[in-house]
Length: 114
Length: 114
Image: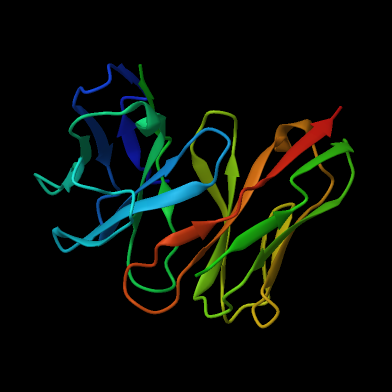
């Protein structure tokens, strides 16, 4: 069964450093997402991406965050200057199409900011 | 704003027992509802996707029901096994718009004791 692949599985970074989280969505999917889960809390939406542009972003997704789909396969989330509160599990997800299609999530990247 | 609540927060049962996990949502204008499984520190595995026009969806020992008008879904697990131990999350996408971002519940932590 097709998978969403995320790398790395775990990243430790110093506060203020830039990190890039990488994802390879399922190849024929059209909608791409990033979600995050702070330890012990709900999974929460960060950003959606369709047709090579951001279609919606949450309040969390401020100027420190950006997403790219540089080559038609990879989908990246960049955090420019990490804060302690960015420590979380970050999930990439994709959907094949509109409305009735469900989500496929990746296995996540655990980001630890020290 | 969509709110998703899952009851109970935690459940411990002996192996072989049948069990029901509950999910309620405040905005019944949804296209579908998706149940996920999350193992500790891991990603989200889709279990069942139930469309708003459906009442039930089954996969193996799992059965999900949806009562859209009352804002409720249940996940029934038959003949539970220790390998079923995990957190079970339900999530609904917002109806309308084109982004279908998911709102998650906090999950039910299931422990099946041998």
